Amino acid sequence: MINPEIKQKARMERMSLKNRILILFVATTLIPFICTCYLSYRTINTILHTKLQSGIQSNLKQVTMSLENTLSNLNHVSQQLAFEGSIGQQLEQFMIESRPYNRSYLMDQIKYQINLITFTNPNIGMTMYYFENDRSYQFETSGVKDHFSIDKLPVIAEYYGITYYGPHVSNDRLSNQYVVSALRKVDLPEREDAYVYIESGFQLTQSILDLDSVSKNTDHLILDNNGRVSYSELNHVFPENKKFAGLTTSPSLLSGITSEYYWYRDMTNQGWSVVSLIPKADYNQEKNRWILQMFILFLLFTAVSIAFGWLLWKMVYLPLSKFNKEIRSMADSNFSTVNTQSRIPEFEMLLTQFQHMKSQIVQLYSEVEIKEKRRADLEIEKLLYQINPHFLMNTLDTAHWLAVMNGQEEIDRLVTSLNKLLYYNLRKDNRASTIREEMDSLRHYLTLQQIRYNFQFDVHIKVDDQLLEIAVPRFILQPLVENSLYHGLDDQGRIDVEVSQTDWLEIAIQDNGGGISEEKISELLEQEVTERHRVGMGIGMNYVKRMLESYYEGKARLTVLSKIGEGTRVIIQLPITRKGE
Image 1 (cartoon, rainbow, N blue to C red):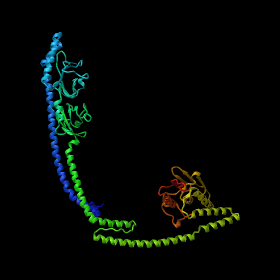
Image 2 (cartoon, one colour):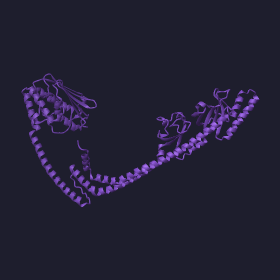
Image 3 (cartoon, rainbow, N blue to C red):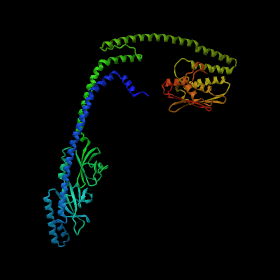
């Protein structure tokens, strides 16, 4: 295992001069700046956190004290209206009085006393007596809304026999402002279901909630004794009559982060509490502004560092880059002379010597190319003299007529097939062939092989007439059929050649011979046939594979499937091209 220190050292040694220059300038500029930014961030984060938290807690105290004073006022007024108070006793007399005059007098007295109390308490709103059994009310100081229901009001707290509700919309028919209300049992001997219902104006508390000095976007919740939301200024995030999500882990928490809001909580001695909510974006506004300023400075310092590094790179690295470009150009066989100036004498001398070397290499290449061309021309001329197709064709044609005149039909068939096969295979044009021409050449080849071998085999060719004019490379079927003949086919042998069309042109050659092993298939496909191992026409499956790859640019497929003792199936899948396209 390579030592990490050695690996790191090797990586540093491979680092380019350009990267070293840039890293050095960036490091010397940014490291002190980053340290300064870190210390500043810690300081400003502490200052902002302390400022915000103290401001929020102070505001919460004011809201809580306002609500406590309001509830205390409700409690004080409700005591006067209860049975122990003077009005409560008059209500008891009214309930048991049967004489109309006395009842009318008591009713006027009770209304007068209630109006007097509400007049002397400006923060007291609608007041009335509520009877739970028949859900009726009397002595109301203003009209009551038709849908009035105690059960629908949100409970803030319950203690000392009083239930406090709200903030909620007033049940006064002429008012839609938010109020806090209280429901206290009167304890009448004659009516156990009698309660006094009092609403208090919520204007004082609402003004404190609206004029938050910490954040303009601060919102508030009021939680009851059980942590349930009784009042919410963000009902879509923290719905009323639901458990406050911030107290899920622990009911005693006084601050936290919930639903992208920072929250702070102030709890009263009675158990209910007020929660102040600040969006994260507002809470982090000052911090984000400072981060943005530091980021702009960071970009400025980085740009200055890169600019100085670029100037040094232009003076030193740019000539090296030009020299490297010249070397790569020569490696890509581009020997054209390019006039480059580095304005540095040492590099100018190196470039001049390199250009001279390129000129010498170009001259040597030209001499080698001329010699190789002459040698290739001689080889081609030699082959043309060795194989003269016209001489072969004429000679075989003469042998054909001699066989006809002497009645040698089998020799005639042999010579005719050989003549046509050689004409097809030795023609010197490079044009593509067709399925029809390939099939005709294959039939001539099979005729020769059936005469040549001392065993019989059947060949079945199946091709749709509509596919005969499809263009294919020349000489791709015969090597595959020849493979079937030379690898295990004997008496009762059978070769099936089928040409079909799906999305591809598919040519399948199936035999029932002895089969070929996987190793032999790989050898036939990957190794070129040497002179010593050639059989038949001397062209193997490797030729077919290379021809398909070249002609179709990798889009054709050649698959060989074989089982020992059962036979071999060769499948060629070609893109469909009509002749002339």
